[in-house]
Length: 409
Image (cartoon, helix red, strand yellow):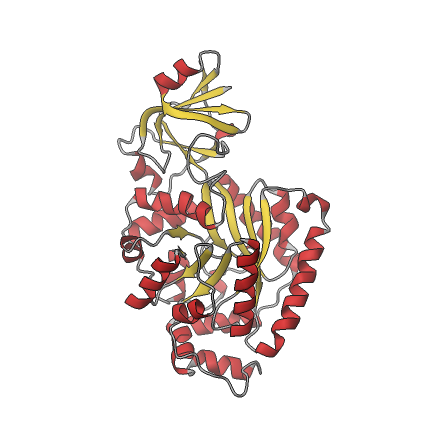
């Protein structure tokens, strides 16, 4: 048994503890509470004093695209979403070039306190990289196909990709990671494909991550059947003829296809009506916001305060380095607080418990509580009176619990 004392313990699901402590038995949390009571409860435990620091749950990056880590936002259009989309489509993707960059992105996450990830990929080569890392999470294999005639073939090909990953004995034996299929978004997937993937997720009790309401252009396509996305689909020869325009918002369209549920991660959700908010709340959906990416692409800002006020859980993601500077979730959290105006305590919950819940990881991660994994991180406070202010300002130094300087007592 080991006890870690700290000036502050931030359990997230319960109030902060000043002069708190966490007891760890093996790799699991045995107890959390005031330092005096924890040390009295376990008098024979080895005690480590972390000193003037905050002890908090490891972060959960709920939306990344690690396979795009070789892309730099400086080399892609900024402030013009459709120009960026076109540039990304035309960009060559070679795993041998992208893998080293993806490895660096993973290392950044780990070094900066992220313990779990919801990564979205179009190919299976990212799986071994995640498998070799200490990260927990979900690898979403993303399908794209707007023509309903291609849906069956896409699903067959995706099933073969899953089989390929399953044949990797190391990955199959790794309880930290799960691989599931997911649609990209309503502007890039047919109704048939979305409906099939949503049904598959329900049957497997699996999470579903889908880009939704990210741009005005997406809304225009689905509501009116026109605009830049229609032009792009026609150019690429994937627009069915005839095509029945849904004439619904992206959120309503997904809801009608059965794609919204408590296991759905609705990524971005920038352009929402009051009816959309009601649907998201009713279905128990988690919204994932990526504020630095949104601002870089000029698509607008998610109404995070309004979402939270409506009782809709919001998680935090960095998106890819094709549209954001890095995969540092503390940097994303600081941007959320300083630029979007979210209180650090709410931001920390978004970056931990909400993300863990959305990915189905709350048995192990997301808060400091008895029975959960001791995947904790330590942030030095350097005398700051308010630990939340430090957490919300992109702390310079972050330690994983095993690496944190501590005095044995």
